[in-house]
Every structure is written in C-alpha cells, then in structure tokens.
Image (cartoon, rainbow, N blue to C red; front, top):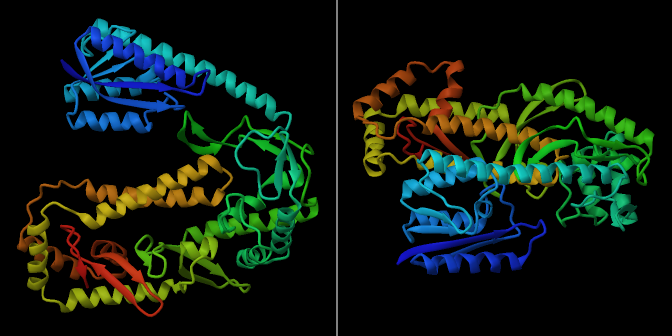
Length: 485
C-alpha cells in the first residue's frame, strides 16, 4: 500500500461544501482501486485556486517535505491550481521530494516526459483561461454597478453607513469628519485633529483610534464632497499585491452620494495638502543615518526620521516613534536627529580609537567560533521588515487610499534590499583574527565624515531609545557577531 495524501478544494464560484464530499469520494474510490492508503486529508474551503497561499495546501507541502507520504491525489488539476506556473512549480517541487502527484480525472505522466508535459500544460492552461474569462466578466459586472454609484463592499468611509446598497450619512461620525476638515483647513495640526476626534469619542470603522494615515486618506477622499470613485489604484491581481499603481479605468461620478464637506473647505484642504506634499518631498531628501536602527524603549515600535519646518523656514530633523506619530498611542520623546547622530558617531569613534584591536578581535572570534555562519541580528531584522512589508500590503489591499503607506512601503523595500545584500555574502567564509584586525585598522584609518554612515551601519546593530538613556548595541559586522559597545 502506498501512503497517500488527499487534497480537495472549492471556491465560492457556484460551489459549496458538497463539492468537497464529491471530490473526496472520488479520491477515496481511486485510492482503493489502485493500492493507495490515505494517511492525510487536506481541504481548503472557499479558497481561490489562482494562487497557492491556501492554509491546507501549504500544510500539505510542508508534510510532503517532512516525508509523511509518498503520493498526493487530487480530483483534477484545477482543484490544486488554476495557475499554470503555480501548478508546474508544484509538480517540480514534488518531483524533487520524490512525491508522486496523481489525478482522478487526468492521466498525469512523468513531468519530464514531453508528451505528458504538453498534455498537463494544456489542461492547466485551459483552467487558467477559464479563470481569466470569469475575471473579465466579473470586473465588467462590478464596473457596471460602479457606474450607478452602488456600494461595492468593504468598509464604508468614516461618516457614512450603507443602507440597501446606498451611502447614507452617519451624523455622529460626520461631525468628526467635519471637525477634521475644518481644523486642517484653518492650519491645525494632525495632532490637534487626533485629540479633537478622540474628545468626540469617535473611532475608525474597525474600532481603532484615528491615526495620521487615516487622516491622510480621509482628507483626500472625494466621497466627502459627493464624488463616487471606484478602483482608483491597482492593488490586487488574483489576490496578489499588484503594486498600487493608478488605474486609468477608474470610475468617477459626481453628485451621486450625499456630501458631508462643502466645496470651499475641500479646496482649502487640498491646497494645503499639495503644499505639504511639496515640503514632504524636500524632507525626503534629508538623510537619516540611523533610519531603521532605533527601537522605542516604551512600546517597541521603530523610530522614523522626520523633518519639521518652522514658519520662518528653519528646518529641524528628528526621529519619532511610529506609534506616536501615527496614532499618538505612545508618549516617547522625539529625538533631535543631529544630536543623536553626533552622539552615536562620537561613541563609535571613541570605541574604535580607544579599544585594543586584539581584544575586539578575540571577542569577535569567540562569537564566530560559537555561532559560525549565523547572523542572527541581520536575519531577525530582515524577518521583521518582511513581516512589516506584508502587513502594509494587506492593509493597502483593503484600503488603497492610504497614500502615506505607499511611501512607508518604499522605505521598507530599501531597507530589505540592504539587508538582503548583506546576507547574500557567502556563509561558508573563513574568518581569522588577522582579518578582523586588518578591517578595524582600515576603518579607523578612514574616520572621515563621509565614511561615517557606512561605519555606523557596519558596527551599530540597534539603538534602544529610552527617555533617560540610549542603549547602543553592535559588533564587527564582518562576521555578524553582536555585543554592547
């Protein structure tokens, strides 16, 4: 008897739980007739087949990697995947694991047999073609509804409820929306707006406090002046992130939903926002040496570099806790960027010029011999950044109007690229004490202002910011060891 896993799936398109019973019955009969023993069953219900990000499908792949069965049987190819590339990659991965894939409806030959490959490719291709046709019809139907200003799902904007598919004003929330626009139009700050909304006892539609990203999307939402928009950005493609680029086929209809804000207030807000965007672009040109390196000692959030411009045109660079900046849920003090960067550089220079190189090298070698190729600090930080990236993408898939989050996503992508380049270095590298001393001498010989950003990234791994102290951790980045300096 061959130990076998059964896999079944149904989507929400004219299918239900009965489809699972039908598939499993057919798989069971196939296994009995062909000498297979089902040792595991995996089922994904109401899940699309256009990607492999399905809980039980992934559990099945993990179980195959663990060698828990020799074979996988599906009802047909489309139950496993409706994407040609995903199906072929799945077949290739299972072949590498020595796991056979069989179908009750198709005769799947060896994946490296030309005739079998062609037949499989055609079958998978037809399945994907059907999905693409269905998608075109679905989009056309939704677009037609959008032309009528019909609510198309999701969460309505703050200030609105939905009744029988139509937008209606929620007066309690609308008072908060009017306060938001009024304060901003008259020069008030985001902090003043957040405090006012909190005083009114109003939270976001999901029960979360109104934060700065929420304010940015509220102040740019044309629905508040009665303009209905749909599909402004391309954020999804078969459930995957599509980049958030503007959509030239977006629907925009004026006067079809009740307005909450008058046109004059709206125009004043947009003028101020455009000016602030211009200032933000100038602010983005500022360099923040410690970007991504400071962790809040109060809430564990990360600090982000910001620039404040006074009424007289003077600019001040500073670092602020993201949780404080967005939602005012943290009370950590802002840190003057010039002061902390100067202090960190001075601390690093003092460390490099006063500590005995042999002592540093001995400590580094001890850490290297203990951990060998492990680079825990970088790997942990990379995993954290990737999780932040996925979290932001999930938010933007639901709320593509969060414009500020696109900027944050770009910043995280840059940080990930830097860490990936660092971790791409060969792991099996021979390190000697002499190499470490040579690197230290080389760096100390180049303690020039223009070299400091590189040296800080090389030797400082994390800065923990408390209101009364800074804790700087670091190590010789040459081998990824860590320690307090």
